[in-house]
Length: 196
Image 1 (spheres, helix red, strand yellow):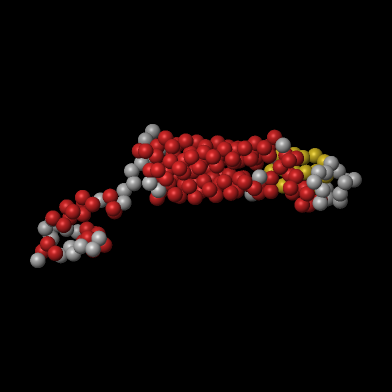
Image 2: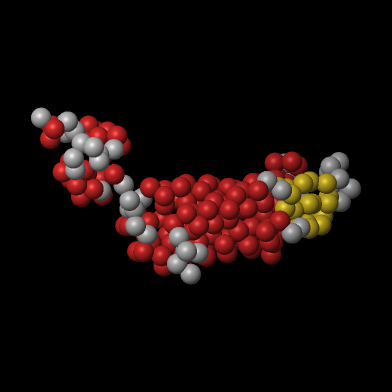
C-alpha cells in the first residue's frame, strides 16, 4: 500500500485524471436539433469547453498541483491535496450538471449561434459529461490520497544531506569522490584544504 501511495504514483495519478478531464472537455457534449421553423440552422454542436468552461480551468489547476507535489514540502502538499479535492468536486459538479440539464449547458452556445437565449428543439447530452464525472471522482480520490499520504513522503535534497558532506571532508583524499568535492565547492568550502 505504501508503494502504491508513493509521491510519484500519486502525482502521476493526478496528471492522468486531469488529462482525462481535459480530453473530455474537447469532445461534443450536447447536440441541439433545432426545429426548422425557428431558425435556418438544423443542428448546434456544443463541446465541453462551451458547456462547462470551468472543467478546463480546474483540470489545469490539478495538473499544476500534481507537478507542485514533486517539489513542495509537507505543508504545501496538504494545501495541494485540499485544492485538488475542491477542484475534483467542481469538475464532478460541472459534468453532472451538463448531463442532467443539457439545455442549460448548451444555452451559451445556442445564444451565440442563433442570437436567441432559448430555442425550440431537442437537447441530447452524450456520454462525454459522464467521462468528466469519472475524471472528477478520480481527482477527488487523488486529493484524498495526497492528504492521507503526504505525511509519509520524505523530500531529499542536497540541503538535507549535511551530515554526508561533513563526513566527506573527514575522509582521506584517496577515498573522496569528485561528486562530494563538487558539493563542497558549491557550499563555498575548499575540498583540498584538508590535504595541505
